[in-house]
Figure 1 (cartoon, rainbow, N blue to C red):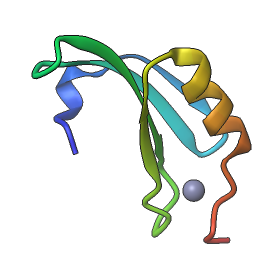
Figure 2 (cartoon, protein in one colour):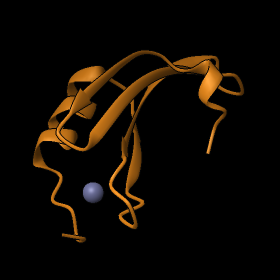
Figure 3 (cartoon, rainbow, N blue to C red):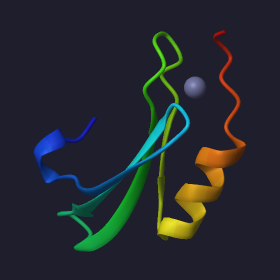
Figure 4 (cartoon, protein in one colour):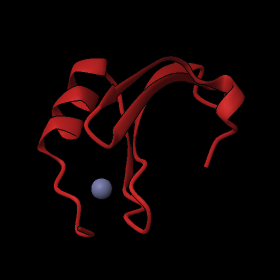
Length: 64
Ligand SMILES: [Zn+2]
């Protein structure tokens, strides 16, 4: 899990938060989608914000 301090442009879609951060090793901007629901723990990294937003919208929490 990268340090939260590197995230900017944080956006919330349902329980999922999307944060833009820079991958220092690759020198690329990445878009992390992280589910904030307790015990879900889902997270993924995307190359574009659109992909992250789509994943956030279609994410289905396993935990209800
Ligand atoms: Zn979830």
